[in-house]
Length: 197
Image 1 (cartoon, helix red, strand yellow):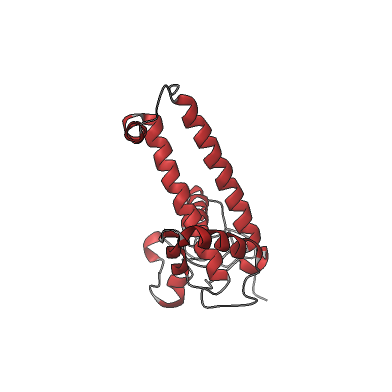
Image 2: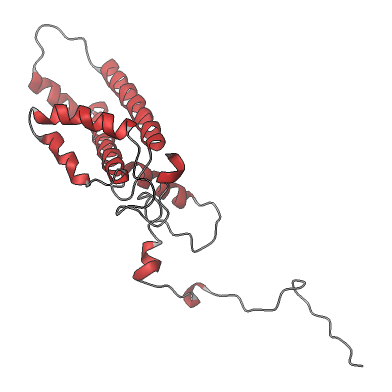
């Protein structure tokens, strides 16, 4: 009867050499590349390295959730992000208005526009306004995708006179009409539309 040798290391696990960074194989193109773009456009964050928390993954998820134009979102996510965006916008307006000197006489539009560029507060407000505008268009495009419509319909908002009426219709349709049941042509790998709708 042969004696068993005692093994050192982790119990019950076979001994394998550690895989170094240079030894890892990556795939480009096809399914591997499409998995790097999860759910409704939520940034290019890959989960190949495990399921641990990373500040970069969280930041990428947040940026993709607010500013991506790919994939689809449900009504719940549309309303949640939209309300938070509106509250941030109103707070920014109040904060910027509190820094302005009192108005005396007529308001000069050129002086108001110059105030955005000449002051630090005005420049910060302008940058925040641009970011929130991109976020708004991102929400509208992804809701159109959920309803199986092209995101290019958002360009009608820039048509004079018609854009105002279309904006009201778009708000009603995106905010209250359900999305496509099941898959549609705008789905991403892990589309979350069915979770929120």
